[in-house]
Length: 67
Image (cartoon, rainbow, N blue to C red; front, side, top):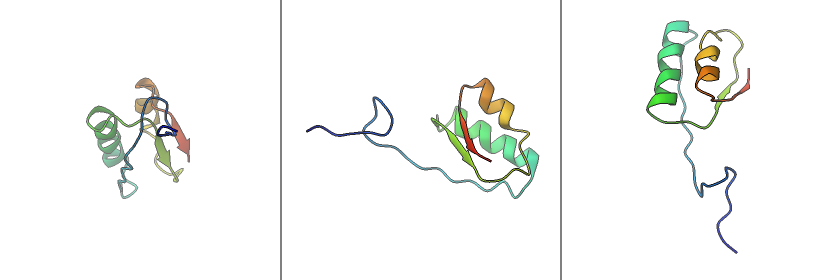
């Protein structure tokens, strides 16, 4: 049996973590980096305090989980 993946077409993945310190400007910068540099498949957010970055993720087609 071949390798199985949680994401079609991929056999491995990475987990990136960031801390925006509840600062909307920092959050926006971090999300842009995750999308443009790290090419993330999705963003998991456990906070509902600073969601100004959500439209940036949506425009890039990156789903947001949690929040």
